[in-house]
Length: 335
Image 1 (cartoon, rainbow, N blue to C red):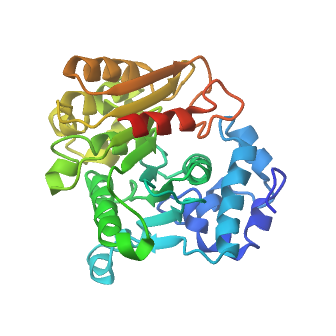
Image 2: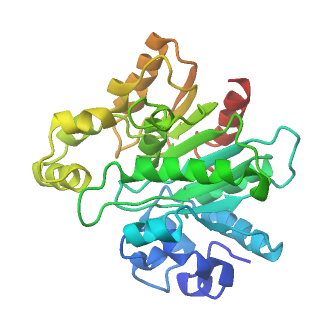
Image 3: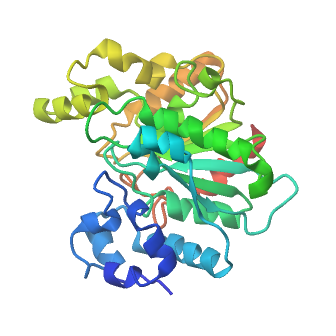
């Protein structure tokens, strides 16, 4: 059993964890939690260095993966086929990790979750895995998406293409996986929240591909407007980030389709959104002003601004955000 005192070295002794090692905290180096540098670090050590990543919640998510392995449940799925990977090797790392509903109900729903990481990583171990484990207990089939992140060349719109490919894969595989994509939801955290939010837009999301509209978007401390957010950063950091996303010739015009508050319209899906007042990474005006925009367009939404929790809290255990998953699922069912 994985506990808060389990080290990274010990984690590697579990075959089910070793198989998904690159996707615990994904980056282009493919070293997973190895980018935390020291194999002797425990989950509690990681929690100390990243205070919003609960060691208890990380252990909970990882133990759920072990439970699924013990039940011999398939977990890791490739989104792209061999031909697509041959054309773009980066697609080899685009994966879906399946947390099937613990007790499937007749109206079982499916969610796709995208962890954050500033589009330079995908931090599933701290965010998506614990939330997926909780949703699984609440009767939801959940897929955590590992999408492409910044490296060589321009990143956008690759993550958006990966989300579209993930939806297509799941829709095609409904019978094989025993899932139902009717009334599905897409959720995300931070940059993953931006990715999920883009799925609702006309130019980058479900309508671009002719796919079914999600029943709900579930956005946890999401980045909404990239250009305005980056403008507040020191020039070297702002330039580095914008070059990674849009290339050397970045501009406000290139960024505009990805500024979700500017791209939203009446066809946008119902949206649940939560953020902490003491978030020091994504300014809270992102979520607050987006909620106001949804209100003005008549888009069903629910917005929670909790007193504390910081940025990256995942499940939000022992913070004012705790219980947000249940509230989000209730919103989804009512939408």
